[in-house]
Amino acid sequence: MADRIVFKSGVGRICPDCGWPVAQCQCSLARRAAESVPAKVTAKLRLEKKARGGKSVTVIDGLPDNAGFLEELAGDLKKSCGTGGTVRPGAVELSGDVRERVRALLTSRGWIVKG
Image (cartoon, rainbow, N blue to C red):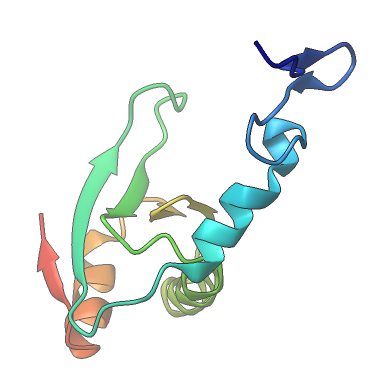
């Protein structure tokens, strides 16, 4: 059986494929950047309130897991809605209930919006 490191003190879990710490895994970054963006994107909108201290967050989910695409989309949506937000793998989160604004912006891009 081959010896391989799966945990290192001070660093945490180690990726079995590339050997980097899981937080800086090189193979997952390559996969995220490499996923292509389809011509027809289907986005799922939802409002989350649980585990957020009673504050509302609009989540746009079901997006391609492409880092550049998600960063650009998040920047456009945050600027258009005048709110803060963040990028998660395959999703964009925006502060507040801005579902109607986001729905109009995404449909104007020719996307299918559910929820």
